[in-house]
Length: 115
Image 1 (cartoon, rainbow, N blue to C red):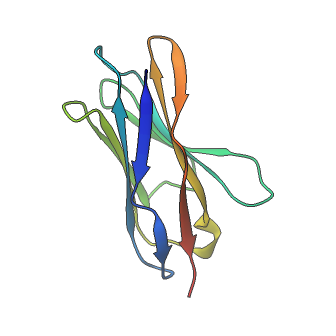
Image 2: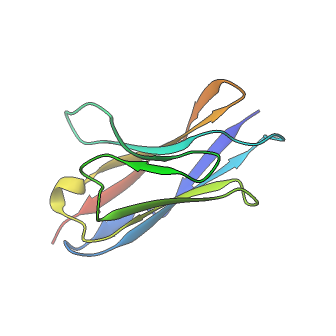
């Protein structure tokens, strides 16, 4: 059974940094695209960034120049380095992977940017 476990969220001051991690278990073949989404209170879930199995990243406008997505296939993990965080980045962050044509989601990780 494929499972995703996220870590690294928390409370950070405006301008600070956080690194989110998402580790995948239950897979034996190459994981496809890995991605990060977020959902702020009373808003729809939005795509932040994704990275292909060939290590090609894509970013939403809100993430460009501040966030970096990366993956480590040997660890079956995807990361999101977030810098220059703003209060509007406050949300629950979710990782998503595509594996053998199916989509799997992490449990979500709260990130709060506040002074």
